[in-house]
Length: 497
Image (cartoon, rainbow, N blue to C red; front, side, top):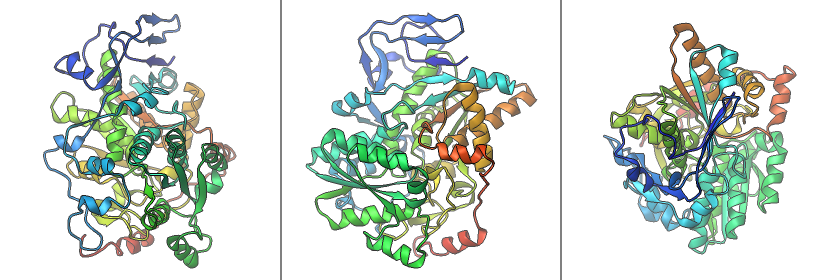
């Protein structure tokens, strides 16, 4: 059965890492003052309940840039093609977010007000998928870090809360954003409701139609939601003029939200993935997970996460990459993307816009071209033309690898997972599940008892139409068009590529 692990200082185990002692780690985590007992149930489920001074919610975000042997290329101003300056971002972001985007500091303190909100769902559980192991008849041990217990049902509030808080602290009244599957839009709507912000969201048209309850969730938290492309913005009208039935894309939705922020001085833009500060906030996932694995005496051999823009993957992987760079562990770190939008495995590494209209800074990233519109797969959160620049840089340095998997294999794995472990995953992490199953079956063939760790970034309670399509046999694999990608890549700014 599943083993659910919260951290306990009363559990005496072999350390995961050759760390410099708990005191080093406690400075990065919020202590809990309640007593702890290890409870072993007859069905083999082990739950370590909270302890005095147990490190739980991290007190600091981790910045991988500080530990990289080669720093990532800087973003460029889209008008001058020179290095982007902090003031270039001030129309879009509050001052503290701009600082975090550019910082080389190793750790950034998490505000107490943010830690307080994190406490609504953090720490999140690390669970051993023992029933799935049994079904696969594998000697591998499979663990997943589950982020679906947050109010919005995914990892996205980890960055939505600090972004909303920093905007509120600066006196901002309105925030705008884009969303694909709706996980990010829901999260920002939730966070905005806590700090008194007005929130407006452009949701990719394909997901807006596929996932109506995500729209209702955002509206329940007070957000205004538009399908993208829309007639509200110049960017949206241009796309609709070329293709009135456009399914939209994250790149198009970003253009619409950025346009609104740039035109209105009382409005700031929030982003749910891709940029450095977003990945920084998500490292609470990996920091918790390192301590949880240490508490049970396990060291991951393979770490797997889905990638669209990269925030979920980076949040889990970056703290482990730190330990890998220091020589303490040496796991394979594997990103999994959809075959319909394979930016890492099929894209080019070049400077490109983060949005379709070319309004954002130019970023060095793996890209399919900023005007590439992926087919409307159900994993709407992965339908982005580019990869986070920092993840792209780490990939280029050889510290991780990437594969792509088609959606029918992903949903087949999701059904197996749901029927064994009880959790219905969102379409996005089904890619990690499919890759983990591949690895576990490989271990069955070789006899290796590897420890597989995967990122389970959210539940699929609002994605049941996708499961309905799969169970009825209506779900088909959608792939990219080589011609479309070549045409889109040809439009990457030549002076910066």
